[in-house]
Image 1 (cartoon, rainbow over the protein chains, first blue to last red):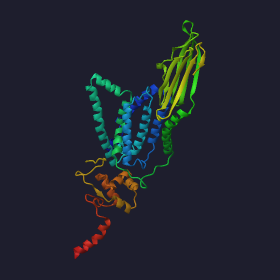
Image 2 (cartoon, chains in turn yellow, orange):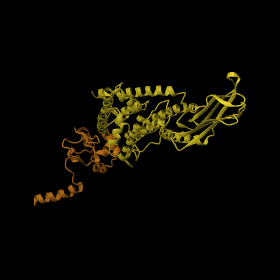
Image 3 (cartoon, rainbow over the protein chains, first blue to last red):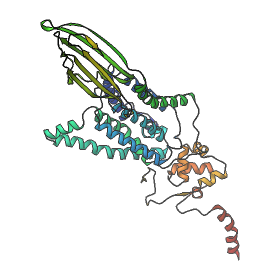
Image 4 (tube, chains in turn orange, purple):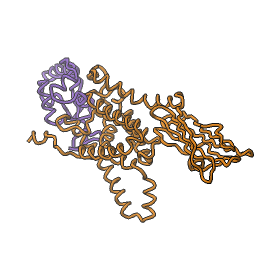
Length: 359
Length: 100
């Protein structure tokens, strides 16, 4: 009888949910793998960090032993989950959402440490008090989650077409879906962290063993935290790498045309590529745009953990027939938004078709 | 068995169960970790029992009595315990009074 109770079932709700999350996140990562290579790499590093941290058996430290601190952590995770649900997280929207995801991932690492992962532990790994606490946390989590899920189903069932459109716009992207699955997995641990009284600290509690794995885990967590900050600073400090060329292009009705192509790469890993691709022509007296020098052409090619705003996008032709085009983009770190850098692309073509300045 | 907000069981009337584990542990020079290993629970659970934040099951209570070699009523009580010193030093007086 005891063996039947202690045996870990092959299919558990946690494993099924984890498989679903891995599937969804996997497809999400695959779709953005080439577009957002560095962010993907960083997310993989975060996952590996979580696995390494989970493999180190430790008691929660003095801070996480306190219920007030644990409740603060749970509140922060709840806030992050709400922000993620309302965000448009996905490979086509690499703004601040990856940062929320990363912050949540680290929050869950601390949550696991604070609760010693009792919430997902099998019976054989917990004593009677921990088992009672775990079961109560799951019961309360179900009480929170079930009405939430039922409410969503009910709303989608009774909502009219207009309300559904509002819901769809309010919960665009995969942020809501991710939040749903994250809560499904982590809500019991959050409830448990909230409930458990202050733990014992001091000389009578086992000390953290200074193992190699523990040192590795600490180093990886430090790296995971420092990397986005360091790369945000690099966005401002590292020189902008610009590649450009222009060549004669076949124009209509004998006009002298030139094809222009330039790419300005800002930042290291976390950054943006600002392109300029256009054709300008000259009839011998006046230079004019053929294509690529309009407002709709002023947009970044690729962004990773940054937001890009168009500060200036102007095209003028002066009295001498010279064409002036300026595209100024402001690349801002999604992690530290006060760190920003301007990229300026300029194209000046004289009336006779001579290229005065590019880029 | 009913449970408190922290998940620990409590008696049907919600009364706190008092115990002498901290004193007995100190007498025998046992750390919480050693006692926890002896009865097969997490050391934090011993701390919660000592602080009255968790009422152990009957099974765990008997395991504790086996470790200390005392009857269950010597370790657990529904009423607050009198200090051991008081019990020890008052007993002879009470006996003398009874004989007088």
